[in-house]
Amino acid sequence: MNFYNGCGAFKIGMVRMNTVILFILLVSCTNVSDENQENKNESNKIQILQTDYMEMRGEIVEVSATEFRYDYYDIYEKDSHYEFFSNKGYQGGGPTWEGIIYGALKLKNPNVLIQIRFDPEGEGLAIWSSTRQPLEFIAKLVYTIKNDEELMIMAMKKAEKDGRME
Image (cartoon, rainbow, N blue to C red; front, side, top):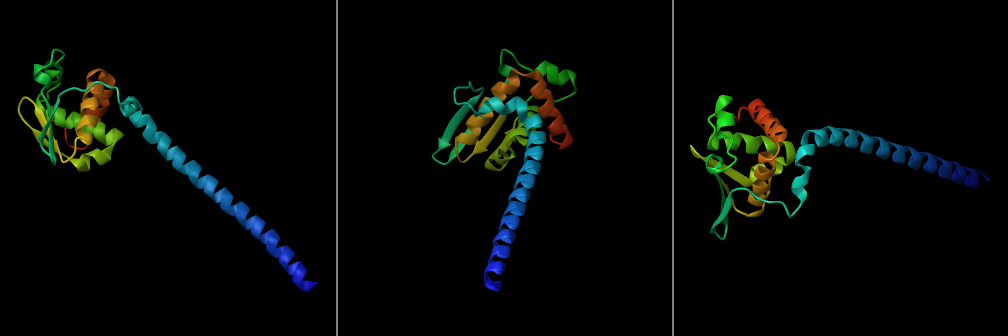
């Protein structure tokens, strides 16, 4: 009799333990979800970048099989922001766009930053990578930024906070 009573108590204990484990998992997932919501609010403006049909700004050049370069010269664009940046006290060319792209990447996809190397010039910006994909992402990002001044300001603020805006 004692053996069966012990097994019954064991089964009840296991059910309770499984319930506690399930509860802990649900609570921990909820906390992660709350943190993700905060991040989502910050980067909500860039969510559209996950589509393949978006237009790109700038030019991607295949330098070799393992080296690609993205070139962007806002100063030569019809909708240049050079005067807008200059009026705010920024350089307006490559160093300014380096900061904006850096800020937007920090908000949306910081992992891209480890795949690229910035090479700012006075009037424009070159970004280097060993693969084409991060540069395509950046070209779409620039297209989005150029069409959304609020997003541009958010990226500039992030870059300023990190000391990357010139």
